Figure (cartoon, rainbow, N blue to C red):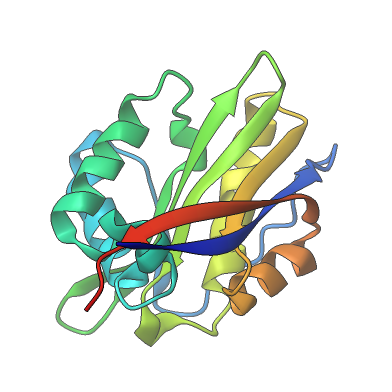
Length: 185
């Protein structure tokens, strides 16, 4: 066995007093609010978003459908689970609907903070501003709940995610390292 250490950033931002600008989604896409019946869809989108990314090395459950399902169940059962900050994105093709984006939110009313959980966009739908739209929707939910700050944790080598969060106003507040054990090949 050997251990690999992954650098992760804890990032945070102040929720704007007047809410977040919420731009429209590109044509054919729509936001789908949380409903418990959508848990499996959130898990599926999460798996398709992370399975081939570095985060599935840091958190192996993100690379497996059953792991993503268990993770979604755990998130939805947390005492601070915030349905107003939990969304899917649907793409409406001619003959079907494809779910391609997911985000979940957890509230800590004692600290007046929210926490973003696993923002993911499936590979074929990246680069269209969908991650920004999900962040806007989640932050609007945190603001509606009266929270003042929102935080997240991101793998430092996930450059596109780090850039997205920085553009959005998140600032790094701490660097942490996640140890992952792996077997020798």
